[in-house]
Amino acid sequence: MPKPVRRNFVPAPNYAEAFLGRVTPLELPLLDALERELRRMTGVTVDREDWHWDQVPEHLKITFRVVNDKNKKLQEGRSLAELKNALKGKVQETLSAVADDGIEQSGLHIWSFGELPESYEQKRGNYKVKAWPALVDERDSVAIKIV
Image (cartoon, rainbow, N blue to C red; front, side, top):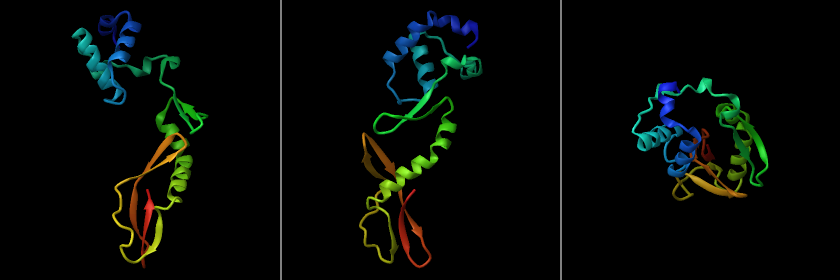
């Protein structure tokens, strides 16, 4: 953030603490929430282009950590996209385990399975796994698959 803008939020740790006390997690994207709360606290509007993330020291950047149902770290990193890519196989494995619990069917010729839910949720350890069932054309029959 440029110094003329940044000086409105000194001491920064106080504003950070106030922000954390005022914001509802996951209500808005981080920057939207931060800009809104800084404006409410000071009356100063921070423009989106004032955030210079490339100038933030590495040790201050967000570290994303993915844990399993026993809270054991599976992977961590600073790039959410890289984490998603690295864990794609594990996610597919988990979805397959959910699918094995009965929602997936194949070789269907008539609608014998009731209403197809928009989503399918199952608890795995301490976490809920949400998946979306879909009808899949298998040429001579139809299947219900998790996507």
